Structure formats: C-alpha cells, structure tokens
Length: 369
Image (tube, rainbow, N blue to C red; front, top):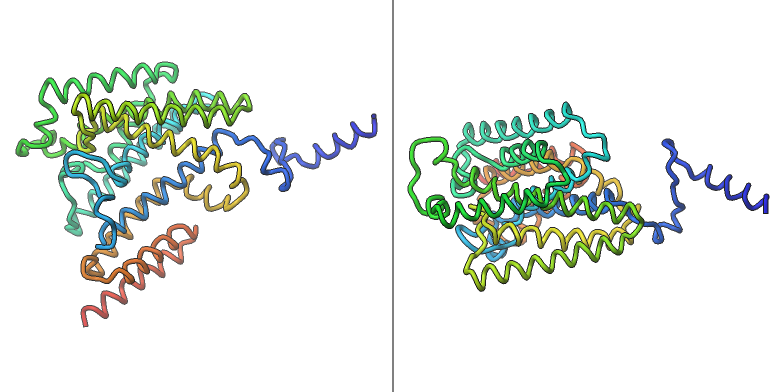
C-alpha cells in the first residue's frame, strides 16, 4: 500500500507544471473536466474567426444576402457581431473578482479601445473610405461602443449584474417605444450636432450594455458550476437559458410585434443576442471535450488578440476594397481572396499578412494596366 502511494505521489509530482497545476496525460484528455475559461476561450475564438471572415466576405456577390446586416428590423448572421462582443465582455467581467481585478489594468484597456476607435476614425477620414452612417453614425464605431461598455461594467457590482441588466433593458425599451426614441433614430433626419450625427451608436450602446450585464450574470453562474466540477450542468444550464430566451424572442415578435433592430438594440434584439450566444457557449462546453489540446495555439491566439485581430481584419478588408472591385469579380476569385485573407489572419505570423497585402498591390497594378 505504501509503495502504491509513493508511486502515485511520484506520478503526480511529475505531472505538475511550473505553477503547481496538475497536467493530465494526453490519453486522459477526453476525460478532463473543462474549466470555464477554456470553454470561453473556444467561444471567443469561434466568434472572432466568424466575424473576421464575414466582414470581408459580405463585400462579394457570392455572400448570401440573407446573412447581411438588416437596415432597420430583422436579424441575420452579421447582426450578431457587436452583440456577441458585448456578451463576451460580460463573460470576462464575471471573472474579474477571482482574477484579481485591477483598476489600473481596467483603465488601460478602456484607453486602448478608445485609441483603436480614434485610429479607425482617422484612417476612414483620411482615405475617404465609404462607411454607412446607418450602422453606428458618422463618427462613432465599434471600438467606442466596447470602450463605453467596459467603462460602465467597472462600476456595476457583479452580484447585481442580472438585476441591473433587466432594469437597463426595461428603461431602454420604454424610451424607445413610449418616448419615440426608436422612430427618431430610424426615420428622423440628422441634425448638425454630435448626438444626432451618432445616434445609432449612442442608443445601441445602451442595449448592448444590457447584453453585457446579462452575459456577466450568466458567466458567474456557469463559472460556479464548472468550479464544482459539473461541466455538464453548466452546458445544460446555458442551453436551457438560450432556448428560453429564443422563446422570449418569439413572444416579443409575435405577441407584442416587436421585431429585433440592431440599430437601436431594442428588447427583442437583446434577448435574441443573448439566446444565440448562450447556445453557442453551451456548444463550446461540449466541443471542448473533443478539442482539448487540439489547435490550442490557434484557439488561444484568436481569443487573446481578439480586438487586435478585428482591427487588422478591418485594415485588410479596406485594402481589398481599395485594390479590386469586389462586386465585379467571379465567385471563384472571391473564394480565393477570402480563404487567403482568413489564412493570413489565423496563421499567427506577420509575414502572411504582408504577403496578402503585397498580392493586392500586384492585383491593383495589373488591373490598372
């Protein structure tokens, strides 16, 4: 018996990593209980890659029209983008207490988001790149929305995130419906002031805050389940909440005639976004069982550098549109460009991106001659 204990202790000591964590052998990876952070990492990586692919693919004719952003009401694949990032911020905020939340680090991340937003605005202004004002407004963009959400989440206690999320959602929907804010955003002409010029971005940020708060509440509950070792309970809980939210969307759309609108982030849009992200997260809890140690570096890269990749994807998308007429190329050329662009983003190195941009310069030169 003592020899067995000594052997077990030796195996455990040999399996310890640098920080004292037990590392399971590869042959037992299928039996490991996934941690909350690992499932969220897979979720963030999946969302990042899908978003980056869509922002370029939508410029080609081969991209199905049903997946493009809806102008006023309705929902599609690309309408999930900003809402999914808002939900992801909430999941990250749910871990701030256990990860040693630091104000200095939090302020730095908000400042980085604001800087990215200013860089994108400057680049668009200097290159005169066409951007639809109906998406976020004239000056507002995706990074400013994320900065506002991250700053707001810092002042809301985690234990009150569910209550605050529901209150924000109710107040926001009341202003949209009873106060006529929705009609103003969607139909009124723009006045010559900052609020009116950027009304879509400012108004939708409030709805996205509700998404983030609900994501924070869901993340805290699911993390507790994973901490107790019940990953199946966490997966079932996320799926059940997601399907319940889908039922709520059906009630809001069918009974109250409230169609989802990304431009104002109304109640239907918020509930629909939360539903889709919860179901995707539930799938990631299950998929992690078969993906542990599989393409780990790629998954970690896509999750860790989420915003940097999104900014790089925007730059590369702009380079493609300035180099070729995306509406005139054939479907086969479009597929080649999108596959090359995706490979350059996902390869985790700088030289594929440079090679991709150089190929665009060559295409531009050949088309000019």
